[in-house]
Amino acid sequence: MHSLPTCKPTLRLVAVLAAGLLTLSGCTTARVGPPHGFAVIEPGEGYRFRAVSPDGVVVAVRREANDPKGDLAFWSGALDAKLRRDGYRALEARDVEAKGMKGKQLRYAIDRGGREHSYWVSVFVTPTAVVTVEAGGDHELFARESEALLRAIATLDLG
Image (cartoon, one colour):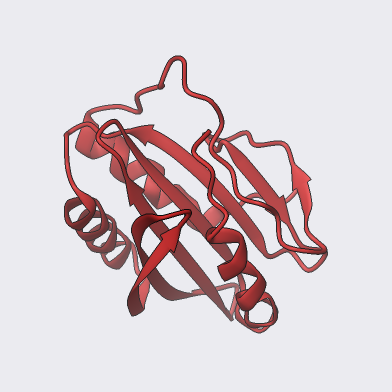
């Protein structure tokens, strides 16, 4: 099925900053309500949840240890720096909220195969976890789903 190739920098960043991806034992799955018309697919590849539209727009959730201990400013800043180094063009940063939890959404563009792709990463931080809701796809197709993706992000459930 589809994967979210633009999401791999998040995993690499956490691996570099935390000297290895840490598995959270005893954690339940973090997930969002999939947008209408999206199909839930196997999480795999370090994700707790993934869903895909018929056009290949993907939304995915990761939950990783907050190690080193950082706040929202730290983790969103670290992700932004890493993504910019990896060639993502920063477009916008905005405050977001999911079930009362404050987060930061970072929006980017990148060229893939001669076409512009959109990539959003919404970051939420608890004392023990860093949760990202990532969404990406071909820019034209992604734009059609953007409102549904915003609604889905707002449903983030940390379990």
